[in-house]
Image (spheres, rainbow, N blue to C red):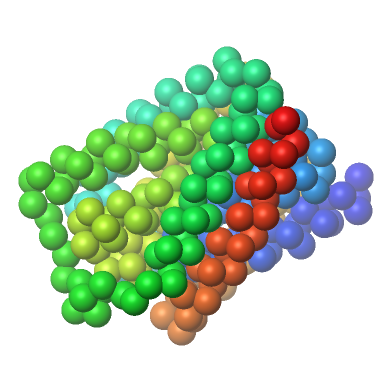
Length: 256
């Protein structure tokens, strides 16, 4: 048991670091780790992951708020629909068979990995270089609808939704990537809590695994948030996408 918890702690250090730098809650790495590395069933891994997502958000977003990187106006517009979607998504996952949950995890992670490869391999858009953003009513409405969908995936799959929220804010609202990452980190705590409450009421999270992961995520995310401006997020994003691609294929194969 001690060795198992120690390995979870060490893994969480790296997960927290990467999560803070790319604006995700870490669920896309925590869940494959728990299922493929430690033999958790998918629903328990998802439930435990969502609690970790809240921890990551609290640590990273506190740093981003102090640095003025969080777009609070956008977060307050998008988060209500995201939180509602997360609660609904958690209820859906609880009702689904284990095999279907694994297949859904693998499929979504595969899509996210491909999307991240496309995002980090192409040149930065002009808005990114200029630091401009669009807040038209039409774009905000599209972002709200997509955020509800991101929330559903968050609740269903145990992720904070940052892997979907960051692209929404960058591509739909033309938000600079670093601002999108910081805003996403702030939002995923609320999203994770919304879905996490549903899973906790069902007794699904593993308290020991969560404690070990949280103790590693806290320093890892804090360091990542502090050095965001000094790290090449393109290289980090490509590394993350590679790991996620491998994990997604493993989940899809195991679901068969």
